[in-house]
Image 1: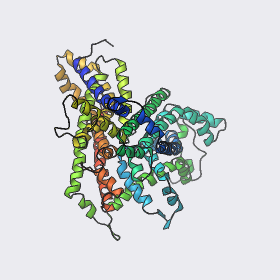
Image 2: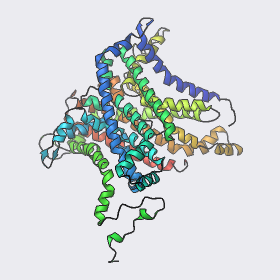
Image 3: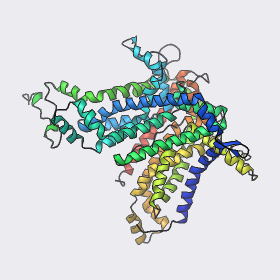
Image 4: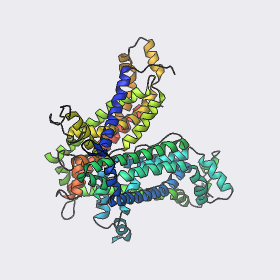
Length: 274
Length: 312
């Protein structure tokens, strides 16, 4: 490539973009460090870190996130594997279904979930079922909904991971030495898509840790709800929380970027909790 | 023809070289079908229960009578009352405005980083940062802007110490303009991520060919660049529209349930019982959102098909 000087407009737009990105971050950082007129310190960060509600809501969200990751992986790995191996004609249908959650607004989906599950127990064969009581007895319902929200990212990560390996040969080789289907999946396919799974996990965790719409409307005290609640009362610690959230997003994205080397092209960076 | 038994049907997968041999030939076609479909059944079941049924439930709610049983068009008709029509209109305006600001700003930034002698590191730094910034939305983003250009924000006080009061001209962060600025923070990086591959697809040979024929920059863009790029450009902006239209957390954290009349905010207020509206009207509002998003996706798919012609 020829070494060319950057043009004026090129520099202009890059600087404008950088300023727009960085000024709010700088503002938030300064606001979070301000302890008095002209005084700075980590007081607000300490306030946050010492708040028992911070730890409680953070761990609560983390648990929900890990449950979401687990169910998402268990649900999607066999599906993506089988579609790639045996049912390529289903690909279009699954592509479509897996992209829908990106499109259905969470605020609308939560209305439907609330209507269907929490307003009244779901009737199957005319009888209210135990399952639906269990579902709404705790954050289970939130986990179920988050698996749907995370579907586009889980699906795309896993699909990219499986396309990058030779599924047919691996399966055939494993079966020819007598492995069962379970064995093929667990001992042969899973180790080969570990980066794709980790990348899906990071995206899901980022999504769940920041998700506010569904958790607040279904009345669960998740991390995002705690962040919002803090902001209503205390502006400076809220800025500290914003910085902490930003750092968490960075960590997750860098993790994916780092893992991306194992997967080839980076996939699905957008998690979309607006 | 009558003699062809189902078991004699050749299995296509068995004769493709390198493909897995078929499962031991089952007796009946039905048995084979159900076995082949078994591993994907949980997925379809899950999506049906937690996505399709809730969506259908919204439709049912939107058309159900509030008291007693039976169906009605009343709730959907109510959507056209001034209050709700205004909410949809404001939501659409906000989404269009931020799709334009984020889209155009993003195009220029992405083009500056991707093309014409920009060092590689600028590009990879921009893409990485966009990946983070596009995900830095919701409640923390609202707080970041309150801390920066809110009434006591860092930039607000910095400017006022020089005698510039940005709030004196009627500007406030807790308004339509404020929301536009805040939404642009996630729309801009979203645009950069979506449009960069398309800008990559503009081959430098096309530009050189145009220059050899005597075209100046403006002519190149008018006759070559934009005609190739516009379907990608439009489809990216359509996606931005959808992203802003669905947003709830950012708006709620910034304006609460006041000042700007947005559909997601009303739906949230109905659900949390902050305003007493018929819950079935909440379903109708949600249905309205889904319909608009559905149109958006249809337009997106149409434009994508056109865009993929040039960018392989």
